[in-house]
Amino acid sequence: MNKKNKDLIKLSVPNKPEYVSVIRLTVTGIANRMGFDVEKIEDIKVAISEACTNAITHGICQEEENFYIDFSSDEEKLVISVYDNGKGCLSNNIKTPNLGELNEGGLGVFIIKSLMDDVEILPNNGKGTVIKMTKYVGDDM
Ligand SMILES: Nc1ncnc2c1ncn2[C@@H]1O[C@H](COP(=O)(O)OP(=O)(O)O)[C@@H](O)[C@H]1O
Ligand SMILES: [Mg+2]
Image (tube, rainbow, N blue to C red):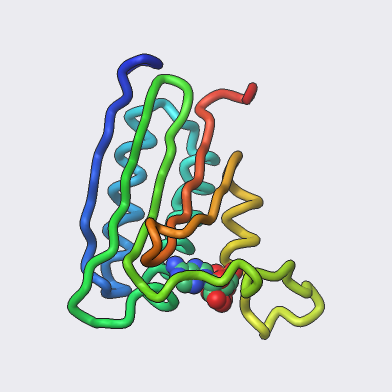
């Protein structure tokens, strides 16, 4: 594993909330192998859980469909892309949360942006949504 030679792991995951814990275990293994410290691994686990929950709850309509996760790593960073073929994401649905009214929800994207170093939310080739998030192993970005 080095800068020029990226390692890529691809997962196809059933659209079922019970698989989010499996994803958490998977990313823990990947991040641990890359040398992330425990705190950063916790951040990555929370962020990926929010992204997967969004793919399941907002992205996919049919029960039997899967969503997908790519883990791309080199020696300095882990890039995780969670994507679905769902109805798509209106970027104006994503608001800055009102912290005085936490019962309104809408914290997932805010949490992902706070915990990861770089976050992009993009259309997935015209069908569905991609949340692409990067975490650096070291402190300098
Ligand atoms: N994968 C997705 N597909 C479609 N819409 C999405 C997706 N992810 C997020 N969104 C939109 O962005 C909004 C904000 O997401 P989030 O911050 O996680 O809050 P919440 O999930 O509590 O609504 C969602 O309400 C939804 O409208
Ligand atoms: Mg959410």
